[in-house]
Length: 238
Image (tube, rainbow, N blue to C red; front, side, top):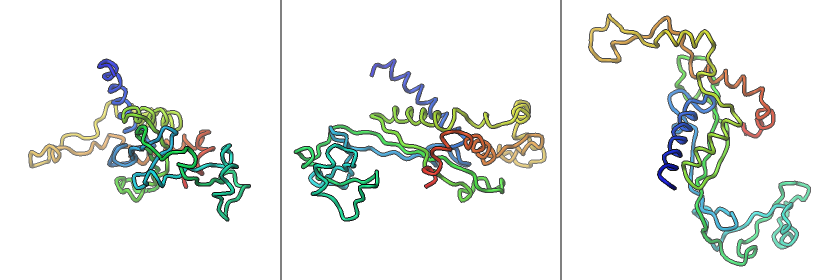
């Protein structure tokens, strides 16, 4: 990658990280996207696209063949199980890799695989907004890419497409936005007797404070009207 392309990619990744850190579906009180809602690993793949677990030996690798695969009929009689139900569209058999391709599994390339969660505030006590027990996690999505940077960019696009191109500011009312434009969350505390920076400030009573939980629930109210929610929610929650 040329240096100019690399710089542009890093700018895009920086924007993606900022977006993911502030999306109300991904941001749980007390931490950002990488703290709570994201996991990634490196997947080793052969030239036929089959992943091998680190604990698997190449000679033991098996290939999952579903019944809509043209090869299913060829191997079914030999590798079927008693419980196989051909009326089940998800029915599959496991066939040794060597028998399918005539050789052992061989590493061809590595992919970054990332999964992210969406969160929902379940509590009612906003004073305990950092209490993780009051947040529920649900599967959000999974992406693959050949570099970590491309993985983050693909996740950003997936989130925008399925969960909206929004951040915490999108969830604030006009009154709240106007209030935040003129009022600070903290103001000087003249009664403080020490010179510690944190102690010398106090909450501004005129500031309209909107908790992370409230912002999250406002987002959920919108999300529940989308086609993605209607078509995928049962799968995400299990």
